[in-house]
Image (tube, rainbow, N blue to C red; front, side, top):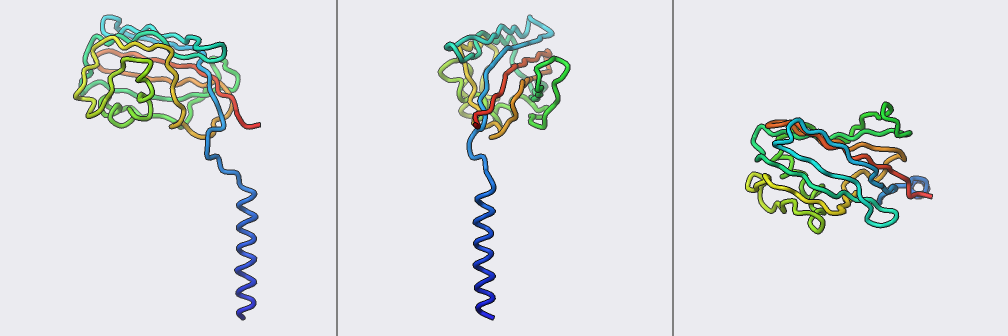
Length: 190
């Protein structure tokens, strides 16, 4: 009986080792991205003026440069949401909504929750407020400059299929405005 049990345990261990060898787990990013374009819409340029563009940092890398001029303070009624769409071809009518999104939420709560993941990397290339306490403690009514800013993809999924993506930020409240960053994803796996 002990021999059968020992044999059973040994076979189980061998099987588990074989299975572990067959499964590939992505522990790091399997993709890289390049910003292609920035689109924006504002319903009231008296309250929000957007002037952003994709600008070359070097021969192969584009970043974001320009200004976001907020001429109002965010209130409890200011809402924001982020969505991500993908297209294999890049044709305007072929983008499909992906499950990666930040649902509509109050803007101060958004900054409190996602600041470290999204905006922390802007320090050296922007005067975007450094939020160390709560977003409600800060004034956002100012011109925010961006100079060749790149966004870190550390908080994005480890795997994204090749294709064209649109990351869209939609804000509503005192005025409605949106910002869409078009970027291309390419696999780094060979």
